[in-house]
Length: 345
Ligand code: DOR
Ligand code: ZN
Image 1 (spheres, rainbow, N blue to C red):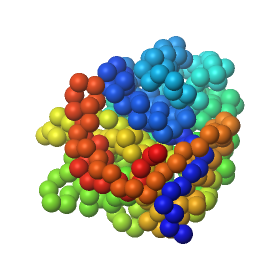
Image 2 (cartoon, protein in one colour):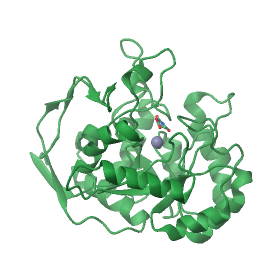
Image 3 (cartoon, rainbow, N blue to C red):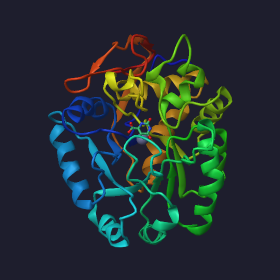
């Protein structure tokens, strides 16, 4: 099968950073053109930690949408050690908060106010389990003695296994998985444990950070891994297993903040997100599995209706610009200056 175009149910992005203000207005149209809904990450400064903050952020997103867009932002709360079970009940009843995000303190961008010790939030997790509100995990330990490339498997072994035992009914998503170990853990878990996979972790291995010199635009967290892990993720995404669904983790940073002596983690992919996934699936002859991964599994996990309209991708290469506007400051998108092999009609 080598189709020149594919039409399938409009997808959703189950892990997205939209930021705020001018940057939000600049990046949102890319997502709104492709996806019906997105789970919006709460790692703003200050974090989106209360239902009131989530409601206000949602209003700012809706106000930034292009005319006529039907895009729906699905809000999340940022779990801090100050989050209470009452906050969870309020979130579950709000109708607008769909999940709670756990950042181990200091694990990544704007994670300083994350959770130092999971035990401290056990009453909150208990309430989430009771309310059926999913916990979205940045699954990396922050222990400085653990090698950066091992932080996800160590998280799975030390923290996730324990968490599953303590809260067997808690709905959880291991976000942006990057290793064979994480994929195996999720595959062997019950249906209320899922995982998102990014386009960069399906298309690139860690060589991409170093080829021909240091490549800051390929730096994200969790960091890219070895080729054997990339292959395990491709297998997980393309095998039809409903545990796995699309989450771009598209994370815009100004060009100057990436091309810096201490560069920020994050890859911007919203400008070509579903097209890049199509490439990854096409490369292993699995285009027929793309719709389930991109448009069904996430909606089913979140207990939301599947979308009813469709999108069409054409097998037609186009060149990604070297830079895009991130709201008054340039940003460098994934594949900058090179070709993407599918085009959104
Ligand atoms: O690369 C990343 N960028 N990983 C994250 O976990 C956060 C994100 C961001 O917000 O920039
Ligand atoms: Zn993220």
